[in-house]
Image 1 (cartoon, each protein chain N blue to C red):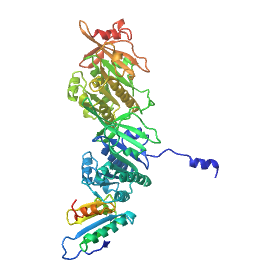
Image 2: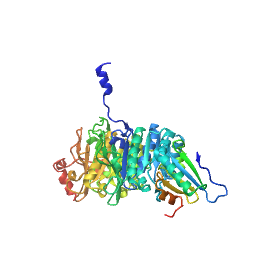
Image 3: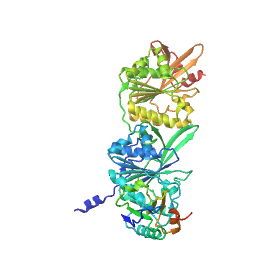
Image 4: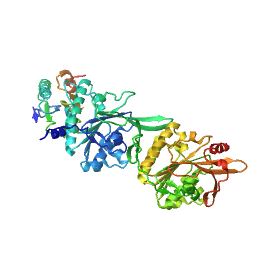
Amino acid sequence: MRHSARAGEGKKKPWILRLYVAGQTPKCLLALVNLKKICEEHLRDRYTIEVVDLLKQPQLAQGDQILAIPTLVKRLPPPVNKMIGDLSNTEKVLVGLDLRCA
Amino acid sequence: MSMAKTQAQQKLTGITKVPTGIQGLDEILNGGLPCGRSSLVCGNAGCGKTFLGMQFLVNGAQKYGSPGVFVSFEETSEELRKNFASIGVDLNDLEKRKLLALDYIFIERSEIKETGEFDLEGLFVRLGQAVRSIGAKRIVIDTIEALFSGFSNEAILRAELRRLFRWLKSNGLTAIITGERIGEIFTRHGLEEFVADCVILLDNNIVDQISTRRMRIVKYRGSSHGTNEYPFLIGANGMSVLPITSISMDYKVTAERISSGIEALDRMLEGEGYFRGSSILVSGSPGSGKTSIASHFLDACCRRGEKCLLFTFEESGEQLARNLESIGLHLKIGVKKGLLKIIAQRPTFQGLEFHLLEIHDLVRRFGPQAVVVDPVSCFSCVGKNWQIRSMLSRLVDFFKSENITALFTDLINGNDPAEESYISSLADTWILLNNASGMQRERSLGIIKSRGMAHSDEFFPIKIGREGLGLGKARHEGLKKGVVSIETFGAGR
């Protein structure tokens, strides 16, 4: 499923993000809410979030070597970054998204 | 329904066991690993943890048709396939037949940012996926401690490990979890706290530059088990463990007699020779004719068309065969016919326990009716006396349990053969060779004991010629057993 597929055409540096969840657990729902909020604030119109539910597509866990849930993978722009947890630490998420220096 | 029947139905049964199929290990574990539970296998790097785990799965697949998953945090699936191909196990084939699934889980060593609460559901999804894909009954996780290097939040990790072991149990999986041993601590991160049912410790000991792998069952809840340290071997046939004391003394005995290969010696033994399945010790000083007596025995075996195995630790097989030609023994014929196998090795080639294991291994594969070990005294350079004695007693027990007639030669230098000999008390027949040098060197042969038969008490002079070893007439009164044998022996000094 795709949320906020609003990566504008012609816009520079679209953020392609993939959020791995396992069912609709409170942690997973919270992570999605947190992620959307951060993206709306910092990346309006420049991001795509793809949510992968491993309970529905377990075979996808192997590809990105996902162990922790939730895991957010910033696929673009490079480098690929991984963050784990419910994304409630906004500062760390911004660093992981390369929107702020560490 | 009667009361009694209800009670009978409710009767508690012990835990069910899952055989590992590893030679000797199931014996120590009294049947195998606890079914549907997790066992911890821990040890230092390179002690054989991964090997034990994989062997558990491969045997499960090949011997018991029980599929298994190998979850590796260290070696990639490709590395595992290669490593096991080199010892003749085709993991690929087992994978194709859906008897084995390999899953390599990569842990990023670089810091993964932790942005809040998380769990390891992804790991559970992967394990579940792998287990379902082949309907696995067995699982090996090698080694889960790698998780600790990938995640910094130890509280979450421990909670998740606890959940993992519950998950394994609820899925009815018989599991082996490996862990690295650090010093005296079983595992670096205290995995034993989670896996409490069965703990196996592996060890790779180097004493006097000779390496010995050993294992010990530290605990096994709800089951009896061997408690000693057991040596094990990782060889071309996989892993084998040698239980030291579990072999009981209830082997079958026969009244059948077999020739010693020397007519005169047979005459001393009621004219019929040794008992089949008995153990014979031939002691003597250097050059007294021990190897000749052993070789006559082998020759006689070959003539009867029986298989026999010679372990020689002093001469090469070629040299031995050549030398024996001079006394009319053609061992090469037996070798050509596939009846005689000669294993020549330096005793220092490996540790004592490994010699024992190797002898076991070869005997099991070759299936001989007679075995000669020439000489057992050579082991003194790789072990202490009590170790050698213990090893030989296990060897004697093993041969007896297989109804193999075994002849051991023993080089003795001192005055009292009984004190010096490692296995005189274990031997059923004990032949002593004297090598007295007076004006002329005179060798003589006497039987100190031979259980279950009226044997000759006299010492006879040995004559070795082109036709082999024979005995002359007993001449001296004083050469009778007991009174003078030791004295005569001393005369050799």
